[in-house]
Length: 221
Image (cartoon, rainbow, N blue to C red; front, top):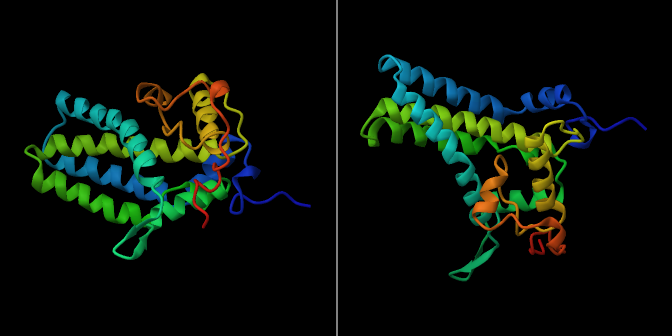
């Protein structure tokens, strides 16, 4: 039997080179890269870069781990709810449950294109028309986009057979796999495990009970 291809499962990937090759074939990294280039180009069109721009880039990077934690915990994990006689179950929540059921399917690991095609223009519009300083707002978007690209790469790697050699990736791999295979109510961060410790969702794994709902997130369908 031949090994499954990366298009079918990320379990077949065991090297950084293979992960990068498979990751780069998907639209999400390309769209985020385009977002970063456009933000940098627009910022450059407004004049020379200043030290304040570097600060805003770093601010955009620093914001991302808290944003990903919040969205993961309070948005992606929401359950179907009744509303006016109907059940509200957003597509992004259904997609995330599918990711928990099949954590090795690459198309469920990376963000779908519609997220970038809707959120990206909205962020540019806000930076251009709503922020008091367009240049600094665009610099922050550069940092935000770089952090988003790092998120997509890190999340993809965690769902492969790569054995990371540095402590940063080792901690990320362990925490995210605990979220998937031990208890879905903890370890919501993707790129900075400290955020879970700071916000109370990074307990000692050995003292954390196993959950029967890691795969279905407590939803039958």
